[in-house]
Length: 281
Image 1 (cartoon, rainbow, N blue to C red):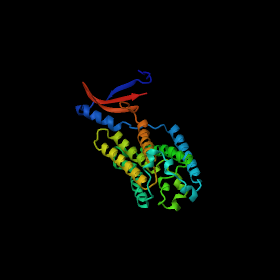
Image 2 (cartoon, helix red, strand yellow):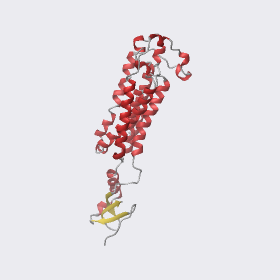
Image 3 (spheres, rainbow, N blue to C red):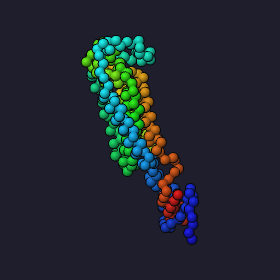
């Protein structure tokens, strides 16, 4: 007899009677969790959106590269009193050593999602996770590049006469708002922490990832400030934007608990034993 399946109705069929060992509840639960999809991506709409975001970012960087250098007179006329009070105390002389050191957590954080290859559960979805990572970077890139392109905030070190003038007059000295290094470190590290937690919700190791993400982001922010490259508000905004991108992109794609793929085959136990095929339209 042929039956019509309505949307949202499950057809449950008991197939292939087998030995009772297949009817263990723990085995059924394990099979369901191991086969359950973690993320769902709507490629038809999201790929074009990501391409557009990348295009906007490139457009912004084109404008950023055209910023004019400052004159020595302009640098000398900078007044600390014009800096908001909450940022005034974060002015530091330029430090080349700290500036270079601030790239260490940056280089550590950016390739962190490659750790997915070392985990069996995440490895099978590596390309899907990789695409989500690109989306997270694109989200951060759009916000960061737009802010830098539309503003000309001088870096903290330009307010200190002891800082090298040859650096202060360069157009790069007008890119303080906001902290791009901090934003990217937060994006990558918190993205990795969120993905690991989604695949291993019961693992205590997930808190190591979150703690590491916070530590890398904080270390980058502190060093960017001490190097004279960014004010406190620049660092805090960069950390906020990056953290939100890293957490929200995978979070918004996560399949809600209880939802399963259209077709799932599970061990069945009851009065008999066998397999259960669950089909959702």
